[in-house]
Amino acid sequence: MKAPRWSRPRSVFVLPLSSSPSLVKYYTFHDRDMSPEGSTLEESNKNLDEITELARHLQNQTGVKVLWVTCNLFAHPRYMNGAATNPDFHVLAYASAQVKKGLDIAKKLGAENFVFWGGREGFLSVHNTDVAAELKHMANFFKMAIKYKEKIGLKCQFLIEPKPKEPCKHQYDYDAMSVIGFLKHYGLESHFKLNIEPNHTTLAGHSYEHDVVMASAFGMLGSVDSNTGSPDLGWDTDQFPMDIRNTTLVMKAIIEQGGLQPGGLNFDAKVRRESTDLEDLFVAHIGAMDAFARGLRNAVRLIEDGVMAGMVKERYSSFSHGLGQKVEDGCGTLEEMEAFIEQNGEPRATSAKQEKYESIFNHYI
Ligand SMILES: [Mn+2]
Image (tube, rainbow, N blue to C red; front, top):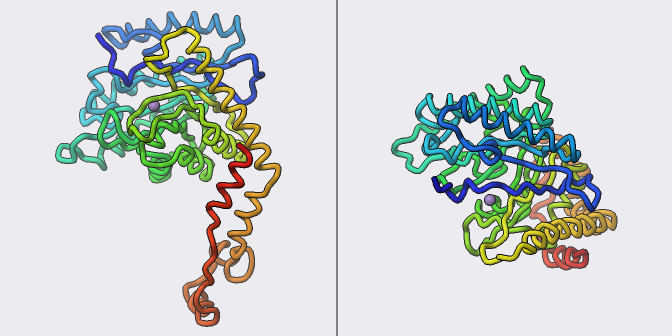
C-alpha cells in the first residue's frame, strides 16, 4: 500500500539544547514508522516489541535516547473520520488501545516525551458532525491516557502538536491558543505541554515564531518540531529551517522561559525532492543545526544587551504605578477608570516604534 504523503517518517535527527556540538543524542519516532502495522492489533504490537528490543539494545550501545514517541493515529483508513474524535466508538477504542501500547513502548525506551498529533482530529463538513461531542470524547481519551501513564509510572512529558488544516479541513488543534483553550476547558492543562511546529504555525496564518511565543507565554511550550514552510505556498512543505531571523526568535523565547527540557528541537523536515545527492541530507541537517546554533548566539547577545527588553519594559511602564498598577494587580474598578479619564482626558498618542525595533533586531542577526 502506498503511504499517504502525511504519513512520511519524521526525521530521526534532533538537536537537544544540551548536546555537545558533535553528537546528536536523541531520536524520535512514530510507532508505525518503527514497525509495520499488522493485520491485528496483537500482530502490530508484536512487531513493535521486536523492533523496540533492537532499539533498546542500540540505545544502550550508543547512549542515544528517545526525545519522543508518538502514535500514528491518522494514516490507516480506519482513522479517516478521526481517531479520538471519530463518531464511531469502536475506532476511538482502537486508537486508545494503540496509545496504550505506545505508552508501554515510551516507558520501555525511557522516552522523555510522548506526542499526540491529531492528524485526523477535525472535520470536513459541519452537517454530519457533532463538534461538542467530538471534543468531549477527545478530552476523555486524553484522560484515559493520563490515567494509564500514572498507572505504569511513566514519567515523560505529554505534548500536543497543533495544526490548522491538512488533512482535515477543520482541525480541532488549530494552533497554540486553540489547544491551550481546549486543555484549560477540560482541566487537562497541568498534564500537557505543546510541541510547536512552525510550518503548522504559518499554515494557521501566523508568523513563524507566533505559536512558540504564545505557548511559552502560558508556560506551555514543551518542544519544537523545528522546520519551516513556504508561507507563500500555503501548504505543509516541512523544509529544513535555514532562516537566522526565525531561529533567533525561537531561541529567544526558549532562553526566556529557561530552556526546553525535557523537550528539544526535532527536525520534522525533509530535503527537497530535487536535492538528489547523498550529501544534501548531511548539508540539510548540519546547516539547520548551525542555523539554530547561530540563532542561539544571536538571542543570547540580544538578551544580554537588554536594549529591546528595556524598550518593551518602558512601553508598559504605565502599569507599574498608580491606577495602572491596580489594573495590573486585578483590583481596579470601572468607576476608577471613569474618574481617571474625567481628570486626565484623552491619552497622548505614543509611537509603537516598530521600525526601530526591527532595525535593532537586525543588528543581532
Ligand atoms: Mn509539517
